[in-house]
Amino acid sequence: MTQQAGFPTSIHPMPSLSALERIRKIQDDAAAEIAKLTDDAVTALKEERKGLLDQVKKLDKEIAELTGKAPKTGGGKIFGGVIGNGKASIADAKELKALLSKADGKKLNRKGINDAGYSLKSALAIAKADPKTFAFEQNGPQGTVSLK
Image (tube, rainbow, N blue to C red; front, side, top):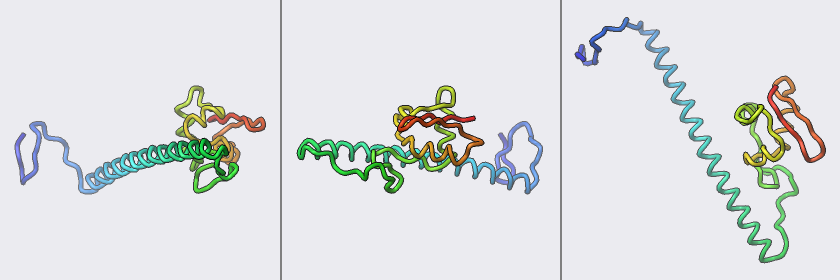
């Protein structure tokens, strides 16, 4: 590799990019890096949230053992993105789509959604609001959500 005007150059010269092309490349690279950092941060926060929910469940169990009564959790109402049963609400259609795209047959039932740490109630609400993207079946407290 040789050096020209302070910049390394390869033995095989590449076609020179215009200033506008270099700017666009830098913008694309920056956008990709920002997206990756955002995804990493969201993943870390979700893991931390799950850990905290697990800790709350453990404390609830201890309270129940000491008092003989289960602590009040809000009766299934949503409090700050968490259903009263300790399951997180799915934030938006993008999050639900990502969850379903990883599932076998692009479909999850109540157990699959709960095992992923989310509530069926929030998944059904998103699916009902976007019938072009999602399909759903609901039978009382049970249900299934899938990608179309």
